[in-house]
Length: 285
Ligand code: PDD
Image 1 (cartoon, rainbow, N blue to C red):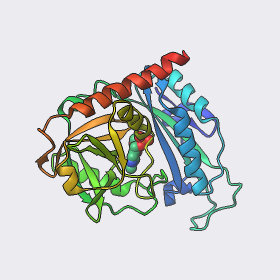
Image 2: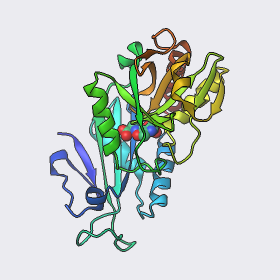
Image 3: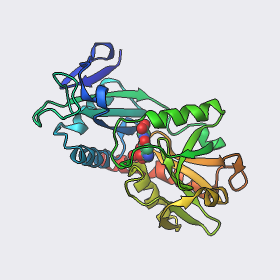
């Protein structure tokens, strides 16, 4: 049985239990990270830790742990070659339900687990994703990676019910991001447009390396919001995330993007992204 981590212990997954008074459970008072694992290596761990610590800081949750060791131990323990590490930190357990935070020295609840997942040979990379757009009705601090994911989950289910792969969320006709990915387009002049980092989107870790690869390919980058109309008229569209890496989008609201096939720049960015994260590790081995 898989091993998970909970508050300092490595346990079989069915033995890990948390209190019903945990604030993560009652108030979504918790933050998390999803880190991809390729060839048994954690990808971009330092950037995930930096974002986790920022999320914790924004919510004044006092949690310190050796995030890298916990993740590495789980990868080793579970013999994970390709997939994900999920890491969550909540403010901890209250005596009784109360909106007010407990004392700052409350022990946070920290847990982590691994998931097997095909990342590189994902068949979606060849066919591309079909997307619909929906209003972004999440709270206004999407830059903090909290576990308040019900709206994203509702949107994902709407897509599934419509036989579509995912949803891009919009505010005033401008695309913010996908339910669990950052959204990007490449226009007909070869300019890659990606929403600027602000409170409307999560600062994606994959997005950083993706933009570096696109820049190295000679693409011009514009960090600004783009409209639904601009996206539908783009030459290419794609998403980035730790679970999908770089994934082409071939349809938005029933309209083909470009020729309805994964774009050539997008394919190359995905290829180069995967090459770069693998090379980073072989240098360290
Ligand atoms: N989601 N935007 C949102 C809303 C996300 O939830 C995610 C990641 C991203 C991409 O971030 P990154 O490149 O750091 O994975 C953007 C993870 C994978 C999840 O919730 O499962």
